[in-house]
Image (cartoon, rainbow over all chains, first blue to last red; front, side, top):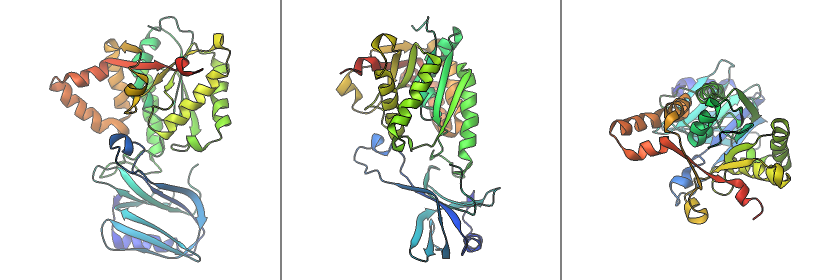
Length: 116
Length: 226
């Protein structure tokens, strides 16, 4: 993955618009957050291989970036995106990596299902 | 300790759980020719450490960790590695009976005299707890005389307060290099930590030495009918 090039990433997001795509969306603080700091309120969400279609996808300029997808009846968005790549299977992988290199958020878009 | 085991069955959810908790004890047993099977339930697909700049993606991490796991097994002398194909952070959401049956099937196939897993209630990560619960129930259902001894690893902050110090402490200083090699094999998870540890060892810190020179366990059998 490379640091976000906003213009390039916008083109990639556009290329999946109006197609049936599979989504991976994840936010996480890690399963040990409360072990290391008992006052930490640990929350996260995970969704993988849900199929949807978006009519408009946008990356906003603030860095770390926010990426939002407008659906016919709703929305998907992720906050904190720092890195991206198109992998060898043509899937758009976006991730937010914190200052220690740990994944904090991921938004991935693919025309074929992700592995299990 | 554990010199005449017939067969050992290690059950953990993530590649590296075994390296942190029991790589030394495993190596001591494989050195004696005791067969050790490691059932690793997931490939740690949800590991957060991807680096910055990143060395992996959410999608490439599982294959990296599969290779690391195989290398760690070499360092521990484990010849029978079973990768069970579940997904990281989902074990507790699987059907409980399916998980118990997974463990029961392994026990029936391998007839272990000794098992190693986590201590239910004191193993912090939801996957650890779900794995430990499945092992506990599978073993609890066995006739008492046929049950293997189950060593259990507990490290939650409240463990000592609530269940005391672990009754079994094994000196692994003779295989410390193998333990370090197993930890190093899981480089995607441990590279930063091993760097720190090396620094501390170089500084002569005794704390670092101690966690690489001994491994401690509870005995799950003591908790089964309570």
